[in-house]
Amino acid sequence: MDACAADFFHAVLRDLHGEAAAIWSFKGLMHHWNTKHAQAAYVPSIFRESPPEYAYGPRVQLCEGTDFILFLKAFANGTVTYDPALKLEMASSPKPTFKRRSQFRIKQQQMPMLYHDSEIVDLIS
Image (cartoon, rainbow, N blue to C red):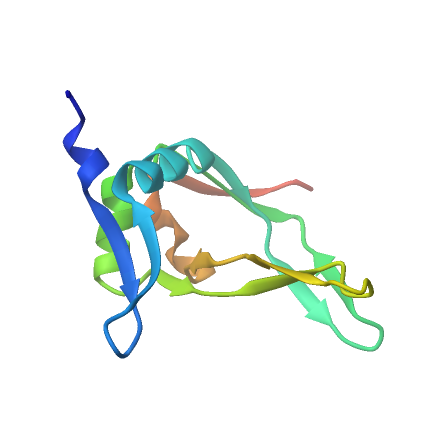
């Protein structure tokens, strides 16, 4: 049986009692990060209430050239954090369901730490 070493490593989130709350394969995390974030555009938004709405400005952040090591370094130093969450689907049905919608979070101004190239582009000028 020939297997990649990355197949045997896992990232585990444990609760206060040491029980595994979430488990990700290292290989899966690496593939997902490198595929999803190879080229990305981040569009800042401002949320306004009454009525709820979002506003978007003309400046976007274009990023490319990431690698998983940059993500791991940012996670290790606390720049990237894990945000566990659930999404309620079919809320008005007799049997609503929950879907895991956990995400890793980072502050907008720290995004360039995850990429080799990053620039702010004004779409109006």
